[in-house]
Image (cartoon, rainbow, N blue to C red):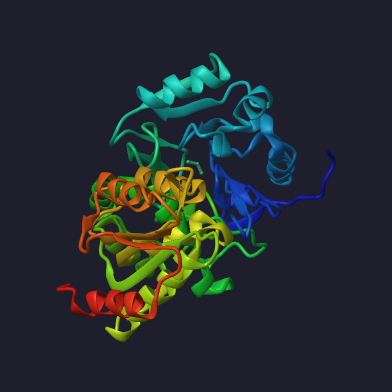
Length: 392
Ligand code: FEO
């Protein structure tokens, strides 16, 4: 596809040459309501380096931006920070146009992953502390395993004080403005939190290890793999990552439920109101109406969670089961929870919800709340009193 895409200079002879995915609305079940970008960077020195590529669908956009600066055949080094195809998807096509380029990747996981996907290319495996000279500039490689794949790596250019961080510190956000200070900070930070919650939450320890490894670096820019480049609010995003990776939670509650004939919904409203009466802000989510990725973003920093489901066919509702499956995979820490729900007969769902919450590592702070048919005023009062009496 022909296009008129041009590179955007982010520092002298360093260019953003990535692609903006304006229409992306789903990334493996993560609802990306503001789209995304696949950021790649071109460093023009005595040697020319390309940091990452893009999703294969965006190879023309990537190549057009590169070609607006140099002939792709002049690329000497391609750094593959991460095998996942949103960053490596166009690697084979770029390598075909730059036949003498070395492809830098981690050993052994980057090497294995790239070979499995793209066959034998001109790979050069690196380990922690390895560096290459481009002439005036150096690239130092810092593997960040399981942040969030085994092969993940960041690259630091000390002369420019730029960290090319790939997935870390990024967010799914489509914007034509490349820098943090050109965009709405509240939106960026919300999307960065959503990104962390949905992708990095299981890897808090690895994130802390990476933060330690990056601790001594002077940073003028963090050039991420998605969303904006941090240059003005670097301290803010680092502070957020410290807090998020430590699993810090706030005195807030999330009430998430599905309902068939409003009985479980009435319980959810009562629970939300009871938390609020204790001075604990509570968010109310009907699971069938809210993307799971938004609910888990809120759960991530809320200390309390109540999950409700009516019983259907002797089970919890499939929407609630999917929500709990997603939540369990993200391995949240430092949360307290309880289960609730209504039923016509049987009423097994609430026990199953509680079992799943325990399996996900939640501390259960209130015995399961089960109500047959429609809750009475006395039952709602009893639930309120139990929540008000909780020793939190
Ligand atoms: Fe943005 Fe893990 O890829």
